[in-house]
Image 1: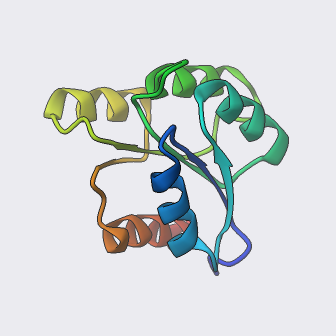
Image 2 (image 1 turned 60 degrees about the vertical axis):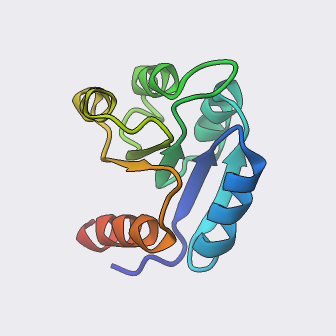
Length: 125
């Protein structure tokens, strides 16, 4: 399955992280961005992304709460989510995976690792 044409929603309150992720994911992916949890939920409903890269620590609503709300809506409940966060401990990673996240990547992130995880998910798809 080709990865081109896939839409990824990047959610992070740090604009530098968003720009960095968007720049190396485009192409082949279409990148949509949101700077906070509320915008992320709205964008996910409107844009129907194929995947969400979701920060955990954000000012209005943390990534775990965003993820839980996405699971409540039929249109967004099956979108795969990869958490990308500065929180680097096993408890947080376990919580994300227990909630149903596809994966967990720590910041500062390695572009190759991020791209490889995304590409391999879509290739399996």
